[in-house]
Length: 155
Image 1: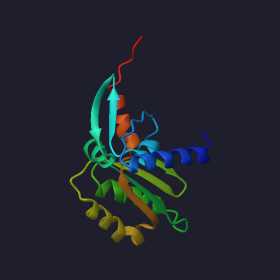
Image 2: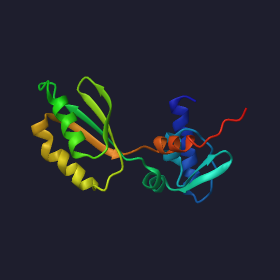
Image 3: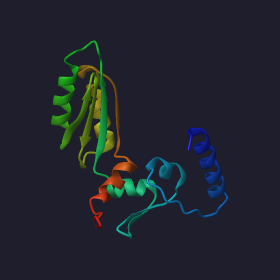
Image 4: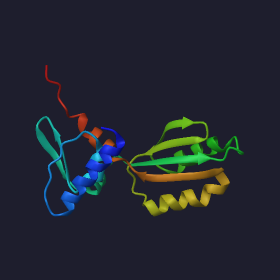
């Protein structure tokens, strides 16, 4: 479906949903589920494994946080400083991707509060040569993939 038609279809579904009607939608598109659904269920091997709002599922089955950092191009050693800082300050932080001046880390679930994590990044931003950063929960797609390890293969 082209993007324009998809958007029109989504608008129709949202209008129907907002009028108080129930809609059952099956999809592998987590983007679609986040946009259209108020409650989600994930099924594995014909059994429901979870049910709840998008935020509930993210809170319950999240595997941690994603931290994306963009360093200043004018500071060539900034990436090394950021890598050292993040791995020392955030327990379980693993560098997942590095491309030019962009770094992406996965931070395992931690007892550290979001506000403290943001505070650490904000106070160290200038010293580390950080142009911009984003810290967020793992995505609904990653929650869905968490359940795929339970899928059995049928011959």
